Image (cartoon, rainbow, N blue to C red):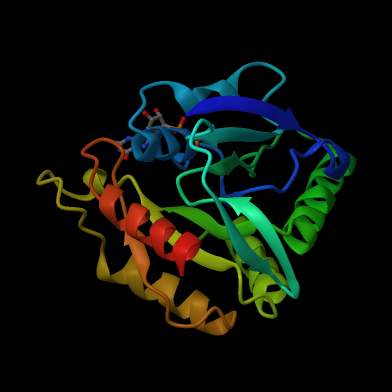
Length: 222
Ligand code: GDP
């Protein structure tokens, strides 16, 4: 896995020649740690924390050297793309920053919406939520937006990941309180997201790594 580039506009995204999976969540939710965990790397996604990078869409290229082509349907369009072995991970800017102007926030959310709406090779959007707290208001907003955008897109899976599960107990088994689980399920129901599985993870104990990979494999090969 290598860091490819940071983008701040639709015109600077890499070409959509392979599948793509995006990670979104509040800042400090554990997004960088989770991306590192699923890639088996220690400091990869901290690239996006470097000065000037925190507000970019940071692209990581997975298995770029593997050059297997297959045909995949994007809506009505059939394209030759590189096989599952090769895809992009996109680390979207963490939301919830206090020290940012209204205009700047509006600009970022416009780009994000445009990206969700029009990125043809997007296959999975993982929305990360802290397993100790459940959804906060910005999460509700993102869930609503994703639900509206992806309702008509069968190619894209919108999946909730609960992070930092090790903090809920000392066994590392990924325990999440019933209250948090129910509130997440309720929010999914209210927003028409449906009864999808919720993946519980811990970057600390690597709990849930297989669950994330299973989802990725299904999304890319299914
Ligand atoms: P990001 O801002 O969403 O990219 O969050 P980071 O990945 O930088 O994590 C924020 C803080 O939470 C850091 O101090 C991490 O060490 C910590 N953290 C992230 N994931 C976990 C986890 O699964 N378990 C525990 N205990 N701490 C975590």
